[in-house]
Length: 138
Image (cartoon, rainbow, N blue to C red; front, side, top):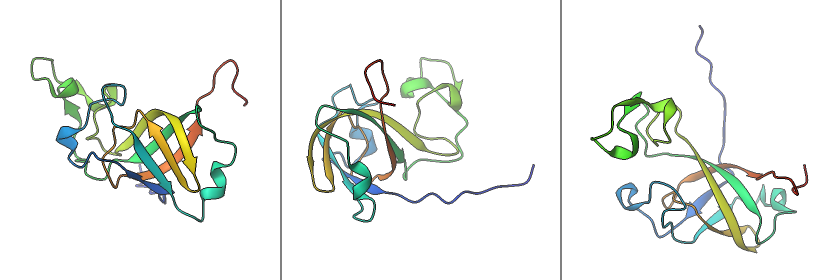
């Protein structure tokens, strides 16, 4: 199979008090501090329609991940059996795309303050998508 590549560019960056992956919670609902998503000004208009209280999926590029990992002990727990990385939420993987479900607390221009984001400071943001549910607009 021929090797294919795709150009993906960040739309912004995470601003967070978390600076060391070892200090970050494994998931956002496990004690992640409030964080900001700072959108690049050339894409900030894409946030129109987002509002405080909205839940969004944040796709990030886990830029400090090891891309050669194919198997891990889930959650780094060596008492658990080694598992293929695609069956886990491990950050170390061939394409280290992070997926985070967050709640918007505030929007100030191109900056979204969010709860539930465990990504470290400086993490590139690739995309935002609304969480869909029975009452969400599609």
